[in-house]
Length: 143
Image (cartoon, rainbow, N blue to C red; front, side, top):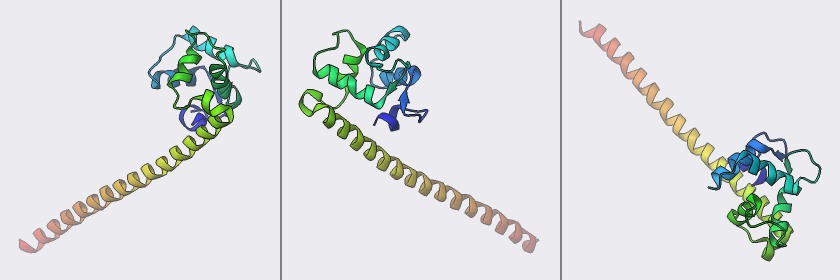
């Protein structure tokens, strides 16, 4: 979930732009300053981006009531599909890993469908080419 959906740079972190896109996709866009503040709230190593551990910390803080009501992180936690107060941080980690696995499977399925569609297009183009070649050959004999 973490890396497949939002870590578009595939570097193991969610940077400011990736967080911006995440919040937009979740229907809760944030200002540039709001995004910086979101990262700052859980950025344990002060690198200006979120690691997977820091991402999970959002849900831990939400469950513990440690986030302000107007916090973008609280919004993110509420928009997620898991209640950390019930599942715990380990449960959230398992949920996101399972979600990533499901997305990976869905991506494979989509790739298979696309490959089948591409194959059908290629076969149709080949048929058109053969028909055109046949018509050309036929016209040579009928003259």
